[in-house]
Length: 109
Length: 109
Length: 109
Length: 109
Image 1 (tube, rainbow over the protein chains, first blue to last red):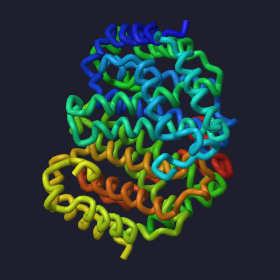
Image 2 (image 1 turned 90 degrees about the horizontal axis):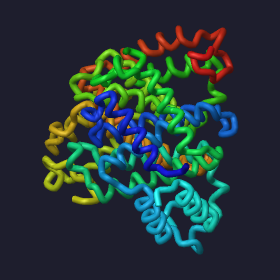
Image 3 (image 1 turned 60 degrees about the vertical axis):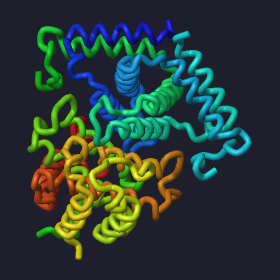
């Protein structure tokens, strides 16, 4: 199963059992997301990418998805819809003929 | 459609058309993720949560999902599997009877 | 004493005693800085500003200064000089008559 | 001059001329700091450390110091005092004989 709605349900259930919705305003959810992303990044600190611990990456990346899904839920967003719309927009900012093989930011292309 | 695999395919396709896989080592993907999360958080800066711009939140959150999915793909992770496993683990760290109604970190419960 | 050169000396000494300069390339120092800033932000998570623990803030903010100073040292930057130059530049982006009393970003002023 | 107090004065003056203290609660200052640190990190994204633009690093690092100093001011902290205290504490967490030449986190030493 690859349906994010299953995750949304499981996360909402976890949250509601603990009566945590009161803390989950979008500003703090975005902050929580930034903290989880920092914990993920810490796994790569002072290291080459290939030396990071894969088991820990799984767990921290899971936390990142959890808060991102909870934030999407707050705004009643359809994850597939917003990501596909953004890919389309990025395709205009980074046309293949200009962006191919370069990591230059679109503002400098 | 609520399927992560559709997003993964679209993101990989976008990346490969631009020959960007050469830049996408996991350490830099995690770093890119942290930068997108900061752009998301900037939408809440100096503001109450309810005053943030929902249209921009959609776009920044989409970027967050994009890099998180690309990172999961690097390690060949099943997103639903890792998130459900983490929810289970968190349920042990935050048992309902102790965690209900409090935002206290598990290390202080 | 309010001289940051004293801190630079103490930090370099701490680093060199442990033979850590080998890890301290600017990219990882900037990453370390982002992780310390996330630990600082975690002290405010799910809380009002006034409920954060001041003793812990001291410690996390100290870590932020430590990595910022080590990064400045890598590029041989004079901290007073770069901050004063940036204030001058920001004064142009945010002229008093336009920016007074508003948190609007300069790109939207 | 290498004195934090000069910077503090200049930053407070800049802030007060714009009547921005109303926005500068510690939680948002810490958030602003995290956003500036992300902008600094973006200069290293998809790159080797040595390929980052030094002029831009100066500016982003200046912003990092600015918000860190404003946050220290909010709590009336003496920057040299808190950093020296933290170095002392870290010296206990990372004794030279155990930490020399290794980037292992103290929890795993």
